[in-house]
Image (cartoon, rainbow, N blue to C red; front, side, top):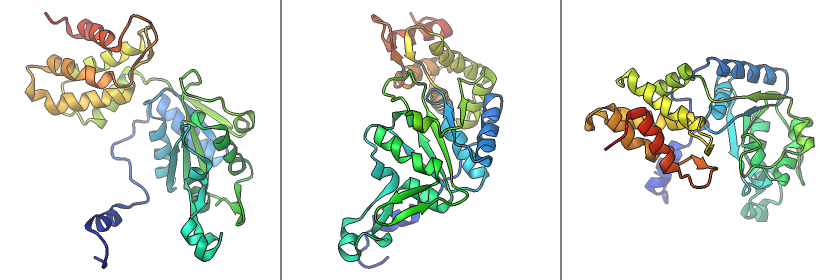
Length: 301
């Protein structure tokens, strides 16, 4: 330990890594196989792709899978109204500017510039939540593959630099419309929906993991999740991610309950209510969840 370093600083240094590998197998079946191939084909052709779909269907995971399989360093940013262009591009460190001026040595690059220089894969998550200013910052890297930083000049992208966007459906609350200029630079729109029953159950099994959970429990969890997507009272239903969380909880705690139905009923409201949103007046998330549980598991006296 260097003099003056705290124990936390030493541990932090050991924890810093450039990339974290995907922990569980990625299921490339059906729509996911097609989307994965379209992603790779687009990047090989120098075309910017955008994955479009509801939250939790695996857009981010597919992008990370492509980065891992093509040997690219992975960079990402999650857009919202608080993300500024400097978060993307970087900024000059005031303390270093005092000593070295506005030079390369005093510039702290953001993830977009790092991806450009290092030839990495940059993923713009939820691109349609980016403000107009952030959208404008992406145009030059996508079109001319460079970015001008005053007074450093033009930063040229490495030949391996690649850009992938993800986007929620435009009707989702809190989204912006992409500018026509930015849309013109995205050449491939890859649409994802909720996966088929067979695929989603496999996703739940490999991500839980749920090797000891009976098939009947996985079937019930899927049907409950899927029922939320077919409920006209819900604006935002449960995602595949919710199914994974519910499967983990049931799998890890099944021995504490009289059976799988009791375990599912106990954990389902806490998992599902976090992301579901109601569109119909007079309905609540809790009442809808209880209706679904009573239909799938039987009513509780």
